[in-house]
Image (cartoon, rainbow, N blue to C red; front, side):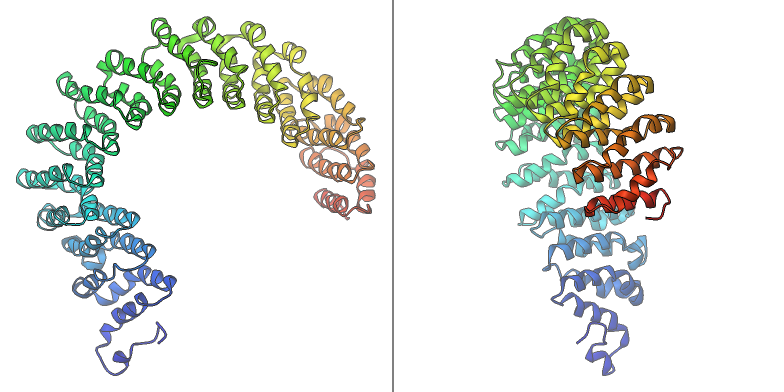
Amino acid sequence: MHPTEPPASVASGVDERLYPVAVLIDELRHDDIHLRLNSIKKLGTIATALGPERTREELMPFLQEIIDDDDEVLIALAEALRHGVTWVGGLPYVHALTGPLEELCNVEEISVREKAVESLKALGMDMLPEQVEGHLCELVRRLANHEWFTSKISVCSLFAAALPKVGEVKQDELLKHYFRLCGDDTPMVRRQAANVLGSVAEVLQNEDMLTELIEHFEKLAKDEQDSVRLLAINNCIALGRIKTSTEWQAQILPVVKACAEDKSWRVRYMVADNVKQLCAVFEAGATTTIVPLYLKLLSDQEVEVRTIATARIADVAAVNPTKEFLETLMPAMEKLTAPRESSQHVRASLAGSVLALTPIFGAKLTVDYLINIFLLFIRDDSPEVRLKLIGTLGELSSIVGIDVLSQSLLPSIKELGKDRQWRVRLAVIDCMPSLARYLGEAEFTQELSSLITDWLVDPVFSVRDAAAGTARRLCETLGLPWCEAHLMPQLRMLLTRMSYLHRIAALLCAAALADVVSGAFADKHLLPMVVRMASDPVPNVRFNAAKSIEAIHKACKSVGNDGLVPCLRKMVADEDPDVKFYAKRAMTQMGLQA
């Protein structure tokens, strides 16, 4: 039977009001998942046809029985029910939607359960206090006492939604269920109970309840499973935000210390990863407790812990931006530099973070303490380390000043510009405009401008292409006179090279420069180059010349067509199809007939 046709019972005279539900039943039993998904999307239409009363009494019980379906369909159902308040007659009957969602909280697939819980929390926000006490609390009780661990995991997220809307008696009942889940035999249930502990604490106002919650928090922080213990740090942060009193936070800091010294590296990792939030929340104990724990993690035996600790080094320095603290920090950082540190991942993490310290400690302390670490990393054997460091060159050049940049760093930067790894060369190219800005035209031209030619003839295309783009940015930074005096002679020299790749690189550069030069500059310097290359014996050069003509004319409308038209007409008749294509495209762009 086609799903849009009435069932036989309807055709034979059965009450036609049953037709929408019959169609829905038929579609939801269909083999085609797309048809079943489509029927879920039509629930609102069907509910409107049935009316609120029949939706509550017939449609919702039916939906409660169809949870044996594909996950995609069940997720769509959970999402649809979240928006179904009007289907059942408005807020007084919102609890009628919880039946199917409760069943979805029991399924094995986590994505279905999460969507069902999300919808239940949203509906709980709309419920009146008496509905929460009479319906949502009962739902929580049933799920918390269910024999399946999936139900217990789901219900953990509902406590924070129900607690604020009920009185102390009901709150006490709900917390008993929650505390029982905190000690459940199944580690996954305890983990989820620990995961929501912070949100539960945020909605509690009663001091005795908070005191009892702290007891269970401490037990979870000592759980035998590290998957449960590693959530303790997030709970420390959440609990610490509730009150800033010394007495309150003194109960939590010992847990932070225990986590920083935990036997599981994953728990210690969480301390290092969240050190910024810990310092912000436990401000009074940051310098005396949090920072000393962090310094130990910089020397942790596990690579993963040292890697994340070095990545957070600037966050900790910002708490105490003094010379004394930097002197305390230096021994730990020196241990992490090559060759003492065997892991390139740790060295790369520190290389990417160390220069973030420069704006924190200022130019003098950077030169006195940090510049040597930079020079060590810039010569590191690992290209990953060198790459991380190059990404912060702009920050360093803006802090240390021209003298230090010229004397200490330029030789190393020039070495990196010729690095054996093309990705390192590429990263240096990207730093050139900022270096030109801080060095000034004369110093940059003398020390670094020759590298541009080297990059334009690099064996790797990505480097040549990036060099062309950087030439445009340098022209913006240093001005047209610099471009005319120092860059154009290098490009004209490339046109005489034997390798056609070098000639193409000059054309790429000409096309890139078109965006920032004047029409007169393009007419004088760029067009003669591309017209000359339009007759090159290599087809690849010729079609790149056509592309360059298009780019130059598009950017500089004032450029005349007199010299270009004959050139393009010649290329339109070229024997190479690519040359023809790009020549025709250029003529169309210029408003000419091909």
